Amino acid sequence: MNRKVFRISVSLYLGFKAPKLVKVKAYKRVRNGKVEKVHSHYRNVEGRMVVRNEPRR
Image (cartoon, rainbow, N blue to C red):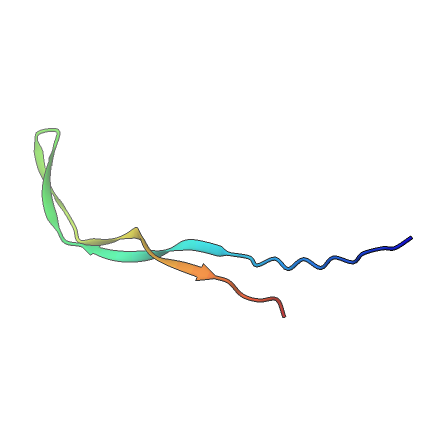
């Protein structure tokens, strides 16, 4: 019997959104008829796309 050997190479593509901090300035809002001050703070937004395509070593 003749056996054939096949070699398959697979490339792994990992992409994810890196969190990015954005500063939110202080502002005032009305809740339940009262005016309250919201302090400045940072919030997470979806930032740049990080792509990893590393060959196996």
